[in-house]
Length: 522
Ligand SMILES: Nc1ncnc2c1ncn2[C@@H]1O[C@H](COP(=O)(O)OP(=O)(O)O)[C@@H](O)[C@H]1O
Ligand SMILES: N[C@@H](CC(=O)OP(=O)(O)O)C(=O)O
Image (cartoon, rainbow, N blue to C red; front, side, top):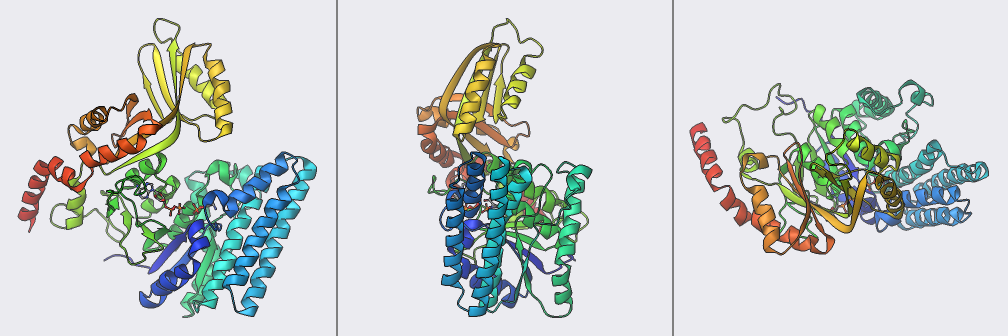
């Protein structure tokens, strides 16, 4: 039935490569290649030995910032990256030949970065292109190391560098990240992987260890895609290889009904739809880069989120609930071919709850009697000028409230300037230290009273609501509250709408109907 290629793409994040490289090789890559007989392609992000904020990509970007400010201490930051990678190589690679080559390659890559940054210092600027070149070093070093570790541990592996797949003149020809660009990338990746595919065809399988950095993107990778770009890279490789599954390995068992660090009762979800995964990521639960989904879903490739520290766990599958599986031309026709898990999925009202911190609310009260035409346009032009994005908005006749993420000093300064300009339109009120609480679920629109329960629960807890908004796609109900109440809000709403018992009660009537259909189908 299904057109299986036996290829599985496994993406490992920076902290996993930093903390658990041996487990990745021995308990994951080796198990999938030798025990499950899969063809495995590995994609890695830049190493973070502890947190992402202190990881290699963050350090390389900090070095770029220092150069921009004519601060020569960028060399010290680069030295940290150098020391970290060399000591890691010495500690973890014992084969003298492999270790020597790894250290040589590591030094060569970092020397190159130093050259770029020295030149930038002379020029007094770091161009987007240079920033991408510098950033690519993180994934190169990480993959050089992981390829060496695989070989040392008896898994034949080959380093594959995608950092130069985009031709220099590409920007002139295209300029945006559109479907044609993605199609081009998929073809370019396939070409780059052809030698590996040839080895497989000759019966000499080798695991490609592929840089999660994929070249000098039009507008720069940070501008165009943002941090977390390796997820997208892995997705495009999965499409290129027509993989059976894209596995995104993290340090959490999968997607939970809430952040398990904040809500101890949170449950692991067997599956979520791509829309739900996107909303959860956007509203604070860093699950997967949102651009990833579109690519693999088009190619009907399921994404599975799994835990590096618990490789035998099932994880969470991200897959549309209305699309046929790979190899099937149409979706499975209900109810006969539907599995139990499908029914399980149908039962719930809300799927998960998430919170996004560092939110400010800007409220503008127009000085005209009614909203004049152009009022909203003026507001958004001002916000756009200062590169500020709006997460939620609610309007009344003469009033507009907007929730904006202000995660750093730079955006706080930009907002201050924007507020000064907005004062020309009316009175402006700014409220800080807020969070957005979002309830996400594709089935929510079929349930009456979920929003009611959410807001009554907050009222019962004595939590004041600054702003309410329901996403136009009806899979998200959000509100803004004081940040001090975030955990209380998450836990109390979870207990009313997402704990196993509450869910059973809420969905009782629907469940009975589904059981009836199921019985009829058997
Ligand atoms: N709904 C959720 N399900 C799972 N994890 C979540 C959720 N919301 C927030 N998180 C948090 O997201 C983090 C993602 O895991 P991690 O492997 O650390 O990410 P990365 O690989 O991107 O660095 C976890 O620390 C987890 O606590
Ligand atoms: N190194 C990049 C790419 C990435 O995807 O990272 P991670 O997979 O660790 O989120 C970053 O930090 O943005």
